[in-house]
Image (cartoon, rainbow, N blue to C red; front, side, top):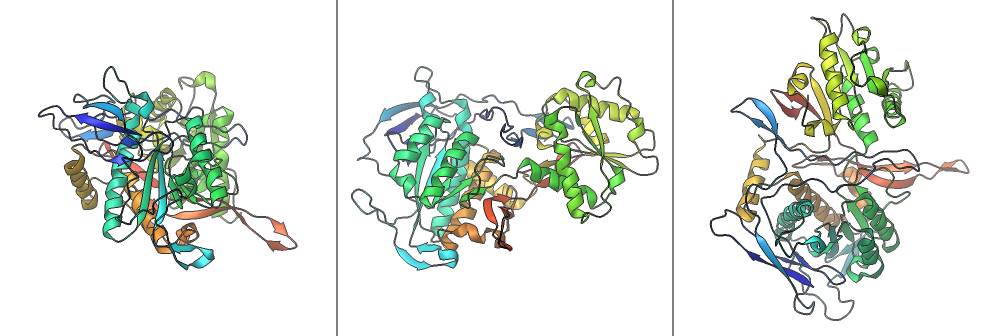
Length: 502
C-alpha cells in the first residue's frame, strides 16, 4: 500500500486533505488538494470505427467573465502557486484498512463483509444493511515525480472529483446511508483496470462502481459488472458504444445524439423547419451528424410534413469561407437558424461566424447553435457570439447566482483551501444521487431511475432506458442497452457569458 505525506509551505494558503483510500492489489492513495488547474486526459479518436457513432470530447468550462474589462477570458491551465510537495512511502495493508463512509464494523478475515440482507424490493432488488461501493479514478500515482516532488497534472481531475465525492459521502453518512467505500487508482491504464477486474475481491463484491475516466477502461468495467451483477455508473464517457445490451451500465453524460436531439427540440419550440440550416464541413464524420437532427425533426412531427432540412456542407478547400456566399441561405422576413454540429477546427467555426456576420443584411436576424466545445475556444472573437446570438448544448451548467452553488463553493474552499472545478460538482452530485438511490431501492436501483429525475447542482438527471426492441412471436421484448441521462442544457451567450436559455 502507498500513502502520501504532505509538507505544506508556510503561509501558502493551501490545505492538504489527507485521507487513506484503499487501492486493490498493491496501491492505496491519499487524496489531497492543490491549486493547479489541468487539461483533460486525452482519449484519442472519439469515433468508434465499428459503428461510426461518436462521443463528445470532455468539456471543461474554463472561461470566466471579467467585469473590469467587460470581456470573457480563458483561465490558463497553469499553477498559480507552488504545489505542495509530497513524499510517497509504502505502508503494509495490514496497518491501514479500507475506509468506510459509516462506522459499520468490518467482518474480519478473507471475504469479510458487513453487508446483511434486510429485504427484497421490486425486480428482485436486494435491500441490504449496507452497500459496497468501488470508486475507480485516474489518480496517476505511478506518475509521481520523486525528483521534483510533484504529482502528474492530469490527476487533478480525479482529485477534484473525489473531493466532491467525499463531501457527498459525509452527507450520506449523516442521513444514515451505509456505504462501504473502496477507492482504486486506474492509472489511466487498461492493463491496470484489467488486473483489477480479474483479481480484485472488493470490486467483485461491489454493488455500485463509479468511474473511471477513459472510454476503454469504462468498457472493461461495464463488462465486469455484467458478470458480477453490480452496477457501473460512468460519470465521464459520452460514448454510445461502450457496452451493448448491458442493463447494469448507467451513463451520466448524454451522448452526441442526445445533444443533437436537445438542440432540435429547443429550435422547433420556436421556429419552423424551413428556417433551419444545418452547417458542417463536407467530411463524413460531420455530415452524418445532420441525420441526428433530421430523425429528431421527423420524430417530433410524427412523420408528417417532414421535408428534408436544408444542409450546407462546406468543401474542405474553402474552410476560410472567402469564396462561400451565405447570402442565399438567409430569410428576408424571418430569423434564420444555423445549426453547426462541428467543433474539431476552431478556425473553421471562427471563419464561418465572421462570414455569417459579413453576409447578412442590415435587418436580417440570425441565431446560431453550436456544440459544447465552443465554450473553450481560445481564438474566437466573442463579439461574434454576442452579435449572432450563439447557443450551445452542454452537459454541465453552474449558475453562479444559485445560492446552493455558492454555498458548495464556500464549503469546498473551507475544507480543501481551493476553488472547486466542474468535476468537484459532478463528483458531489453523482455520489449523493446514486448513494441515495441504492439506499432506497437496493441493488437493482437502476430500475427506478426513470421515476426519479432530480435537479442537481451541475445539471439535471433525467435517465431513460436505451432499448433495442426485438419481436418474437408477435410479442415485443425490449433489451436494455444502457441507462442514459438524456438531459442536456441549452446555454445562450449573453452579456459575454453563457447563461441558461429560455
